[in-house]
Length: 408
Ligand SMILES: Cc1ncc(COP(=O)(O)O)c(C=O)c1O
Image (cartoon, rainbow, N blue to C red; front, side, top):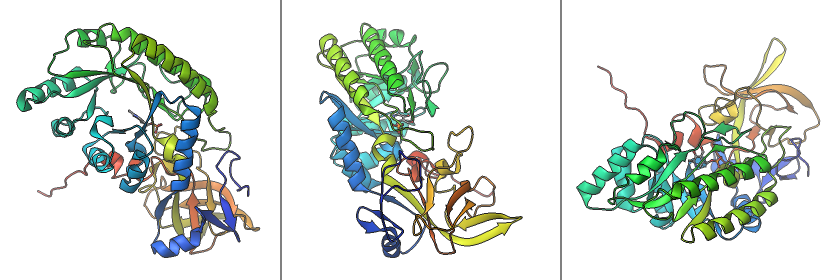
């Protein structure tokens, strides 16, 4: 049935007004879990999404999963079995990736400010380090000298172009990510043989729904990698052009049309094969693989009316789901798709704000949104929550360790 949500949100079944996920009623799942809030991820949807990617993209293009989007260990293991590689962003994510069954040679580590301990762990595990700065390269060389190992590294390039109309731009201009493209030839020319050069990583941005813009940036990324290859100590073996494939969150969003991206990638893979036969082309996707497969579910603790406005005060909030609260990169806050999971289409409807129990007005899961009239104990569902949910919320951000506290 069509849910009262943006038309492009993947359809879910409904049984007697209760949401059904992977053939199970939400209320039954909540009873079994025994407490709220919780995140639910549908393996059926994740597998279907990866199959869609496999159908649309040429076989020559490797599909890598960016663990940062959702590092839940069982989920990573499931995805690892269906993809060609994993990209991690912290020592915590590296541990999860290594435990997933993915061979270390297909795991890479990108992210600014990697600690020496993280770099050592990466080298010891034999994974690929996407080097983000000349300083990081020096640290790798130091580790090579100290351990007698030959670290595998690719250069993450900060290109001079950006992924336009993206939820998050991570390239072009001055950035903390990658080595500026104009500096890369010098770094490559001075490349020291203690590090095994593998290729290039060019990640331009996240959350883009425009296939033309994505294709344009992919062409520019391959062009850039090919021109930088002329300075490399050996031909690249991997050209990772990132991804940025987005999912629809808001009423005006339309799902990304994958078919033109697949056709375009086929042409790029052919070009790369001719210029650098040893290299494979890779895309690195997080949100697109898991985002639409996940729900965040919390329970209404209280219906409160303040000066005529209805607040549903729940046991969930921004500490679990920073993205839905609008505090993770949204310039103007917009509501994620939210409904009452046990009264999906409920006839009596009202405009409400769904909030959490934190002492800040930022703790908002839905602002003035129309949904079925909810009562205490009802289940509030936030859709499109499979990516950048718990992992992008305080204090779990990218599985980095928490800060120490000390009273002196
Ligand atoms: C280096 C890198 N790879 C992959 C991703 C995943 O992006 P997305 O989840 O939009 O596919 C990100 C997102 O920030 C990133 O920084």
